Image (spheres, rainbow, N blue to C red):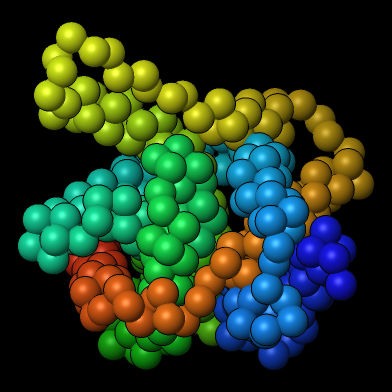
Length: 332
């Protein structure tokens, strides 16, 4: 089957599977499922892409990904931040900065991992899993193998974290709403926040989703800030100080902010809004399936234990450190 038909088919299959009770209870959204399906197909000998297919795969990973992120803005609104309170926004900002900073330091300085791999793993843990990794990859031009490894480790520990929340809640001694904030501020994926919140209560789930969506919204300014900082670092470390380093502005992130703003202040019919949201999910699922087809177990295995250990450390920091940070900022 031509890859131009195969990738949309994989995306549709992933979206359909995500709606079933089995996968929704596991907290597996369409994006992780799409990369699993793409990886499975990519390991079959009869589906090794030729040069023309590789061009289409690259198109999906870049152009369709950007369109999907822009469309995703229609799933968010600025009013959601106001409704949940400024403390939750501050908490999300702290979580993102702390997890990203510690993860980047450990990955680059201590584990000596490639810079883009450490950054992608840290971003995925700090903000919104695989979607954040793909959005950041488009800005820092990371190597394909490093993107694959970062997605695999974040999906693994994000799923493990989701199953940990009900156990933690039994010993937390916090209210349902407070624990919902904790879930939203530390869960890797939106679907995992939904699944974990449902095990507590409807109130906990709604709160978790709102706080999680605020973290997703912070992806846009974060990428802009990261792009500028990395551009300046690259400029100061170059040997030729007279040369100017071009800072590439990820315009699709600005598009993301614009669509979120439109959704915040314009009255959009529910059918149109649902169409935008479904389109976003479809485009992102295609991009993930394309990434999966480029994913090979040998490449992940060759990276060694350090990327997995980095993701594990961030997983522990989110659950333990995030819990105490929630206690300081929310419960106090």
